[in-house]
Image (tube, rainbow, N blue to C red; front, side, top):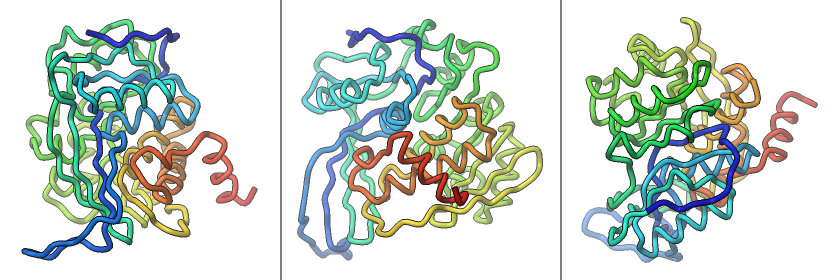
Length: 313
């Protein structure tokens, strides 16, 4: 069963997973064999693909989400969140009798978090589930969580000139080079965190890791460095772009997803990769000052205002 809505052709297609995040606010993470009390506990929409789709929509672009939900209460919350943020849901498949993916995420007073994935319905499993009409006219295909054959089929369905942006995330990064390399070879920009880069390459030095990733086929590598910004490797040249100052870090959940949304929006707007990465940094800096993976996602005016301040305008 598909959720239907009336949309014009999306500018961006996001292939990935949405999940319901159960957020627990704690003063500190418990030590082994100890216990802590949560000051707050509540469900919030999440999942890398879902976060990026909503982030792109808030930045003013038409975006479609391609993934699955269960018909449980979690799925209803996730579907409504997409509809409220004007994400095209024609590519959402709702599976009767199934539970949607979810995560348990404790967050401490410094905004650091741990993520425990519980699983559930989330990803396309058959190539036939991809609707060609939702892919052929997009400017950007963003691949988050996906089976290899599904990711490659999606790339086959986009038009010539469309850009492929890929963020393997922790789960896909753990699948290894043989699984990832065919996707890297079809990727225009590869986005990875420090942990993801280390998992894939077994290298901890960012430039070495980025070089290894580029050698696998990605045309541009964006290696995020947390508070230190992002390392961009393009055509053999490195460029480190600084992060934006944040008065208080409230929640780092979804920071990488916010970065990805900013990058994608920048590409759709015709920016080069470095400026798109700057837009990603600005988007992430605004998000982490707020609780939840999506609640702090900014709109285009907020991001452009911050970029203007950084450039002294």
